[in-house]
Image (cartoon, rainbow, N blue to C red; front, side, top):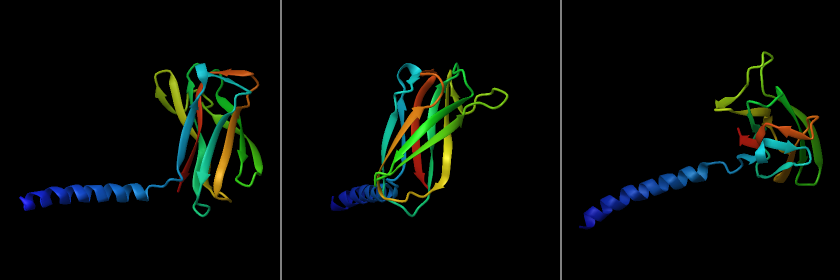
Amino acid sequence: MKNDITHTIKPAMTAFLFVLLFLSSCSNDDFDKRTVIPEAEWKQENRVTFDVDINDTISPYEFGIGLRHLENYRYSNLFVFLHTTMPNGNHTHDTIECTLATPEGKWIGKSSGSMRDLTVPLNESLLFPLSGTYHFEIEQAMREPVLKGISDIGLYIEKQ
């Protein structure tokens, strides 16, 4: 009877230790979140915000924007303002153009019905200068006060 219990416990314990080791080796510095734009109508005054904790200032990160748009979106690009507040309170502001279609008018990104999903890399080897919480705000920077057809916008940060 004791031998049967040992044979049952050893595989279970081995599996548990494997899962624990796997989870402990995963990076907690990766970030990938999106915010849904209600009714796919993004008002200029509605900023999308993300707070990201960065612990590693030595490793490079891939940094970019993720977005989804409807195929009836009327432009081939999207301009956004990216506002960044660093842990020490310093601010940066960038204007970013996200290309959504080729010059021939073919949509870029993965298709799912009438929706397009794509990522726009901004920096493939970003080094964060400080550890702590970074605050990011994204706002649409097109000429329309209400931009129709953008269904969600987000940020991804992945340790290389």
